[in-house]
Length: 173
Image 1 (cartoon, helix red, strand yellow):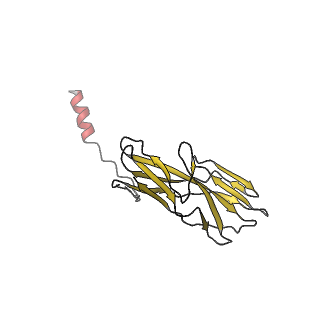
Image 2 (cartoon, rainbow, N blue to C red):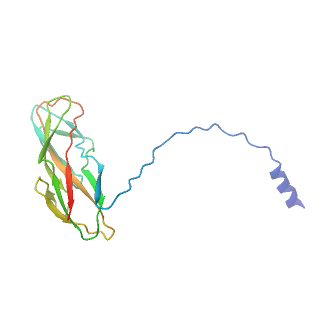
């Protein structure tokens, strides 16, 4: 009898007023690959740098490590290699090459050169306009690879955002 009254008391308890709610939107994305294709996952980013009265370089290795030479100071932990992914077929050979062995990036100051593009492979390989061959080793045919490079920073380089593009070409054999 007491158990029934307790249940009844819970059912008849007054409703608690709803608290204020707010919402926001986010994006959802997907890439559906067709066989023998590839896409860019992220861009080559040299991170934040501080120039000086002396020229220098910033290098992003395919493994993500960042180094400098000359009068450049690395600021923060930024910087990452470009990353590409794709879908082929198991054991298929692929030739990879660059559209150009170097590019210029532009911004508010003097343009800067990017050179020595390097693909993350075992062992790593310098990319050039001459194709480098690799084999797809995943049984599912999927693959991904990072690409690093070296940025030449001028003496007294003007602050600001600099950008440019480079082309990677894959030929499935």
